[in-house]
Structure formats: structure tokens, C-alpha cells
Image (cartoon, rainbow, N blue to C red; front, side):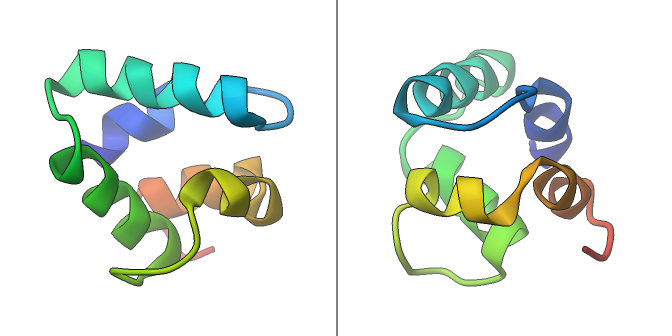
Length: 75
């Protein structure tokens, strides 16, 4: 699931519209939605089960770090 998220990660800045498009693409590729979609993304990106909304964190994490984390690499 996180590989599909990494492969679908958009170039450029992440804003609310891009966030919806990206998570929609991941949902379409994996068939996951709701908790089954967002929990693995949160765990891969933050190593936390709870916290601020991911759409607010994504600009802070940055594209390179986010893609590396989604692929299970140290970032």
C-alpha cells in the first residue's frame, strides 16, 4: 500500500487540493479507504498512530523525505 502511495506522490507543493487528489489516487490503486487508507500512511510518514492532520504535516515533511518514508527507507 505504501509503495502505491510513494509511486503516486505528486511533484511540487502539497496543498489541500493536491492532498485530496493524491489520497484519491492511492485509494483508487489500492481499494482502501478511511482508516485502512490513512492509518498506514500516518504510520509510514510519522511513525505515530495519532497526531495532527497529515495534510498539514505533508508540506513540513517534504517530498523527498515523504517518499523515502513511504518506501520504508530511513529519512
